[in-house]
Amino acid sequence: MQENIAVVFDFDDTLAPDSTSGFLAECGLDVPRFWQDEVHPLLADNWDPVPAYLYKMIEKSGSGEIEPITRQALMNWGSRLPLFPGAEDIFECLRGVVKEINPKVVLEFYLISSGIGDVLRNSKIAHQFSAIWASDFVYDEAEQIKFPKRVVSFTDKTRYIFHIQKGIFGPHFDDKPFEVNRKVPQEKIRVPISQMIMVGDGYTDIPCFSLVRREQGIAIGVYDRKNSDRRGRAWGFIEEGRVSNLATQDYREGYGLSDSLIMAVESIARRISLASHTYQG
Image 1 (cartoon, one colour):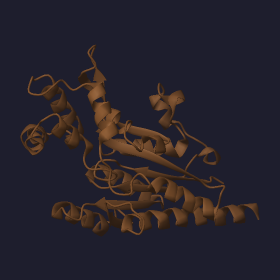
Image 2 (tube, helix red, strand yellow):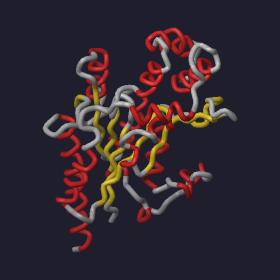
Image 3 (cartoon, helix red, strand yellow):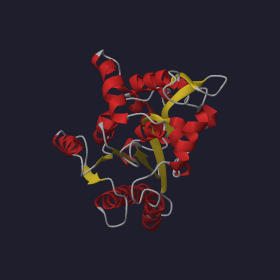
């Protein structure tokens, strides 16, 4: 009987305001203009949104319009970027909830994001995650961004759900990208998808929402109550059956998102305890 629960987070607009936009603002760019005038025309030319923004960042970095974008600059921004209220505290809160129900159940956290890995891996909450998967750059001799190394977008995100399910992460698997396709016997599954909680805000999370929901896991949509467009999009996720619940971007105790996460981990922890008792009996 597998006794692990995985809470899988998106990052931008889920745990924190858009980290890429924040970085570009720090660089001195007009951020709305960057997305509208630089990235949007590529989308109209059938580019995927994630490589489109990575390509435009590389182009801007070498244009002379801003200081070249370096690995260190991305890492420095990651260490400073703001988080949504309560985001730093929610992890220990949820661990405490699970421990109280069944100390044998292990609660794990994972991050799957279309954002920039060197930013996210240096955030104040990076140490909470068992694994972080995000888009990454190759750097040149001067440590300036040169080319996309990894692109995480839409259905790419579902790949990492299977990494979590099979326990395929960590340094041992860094040079084994095809291991995720390996068939794993049911008894060796690390985290059944039915014991996963997916938390995200946007269109890139829809494939993960759908996969987790289909396998009887829990999907929670996060939205910005001040943004009417995102509020409407979030409600669309409910209407289409993409998510189990919706909550605003506030992880503080007593707020809807905290309550939703607590109820979700409680539900799965109790289910595991009941199944374990039945199995042993």
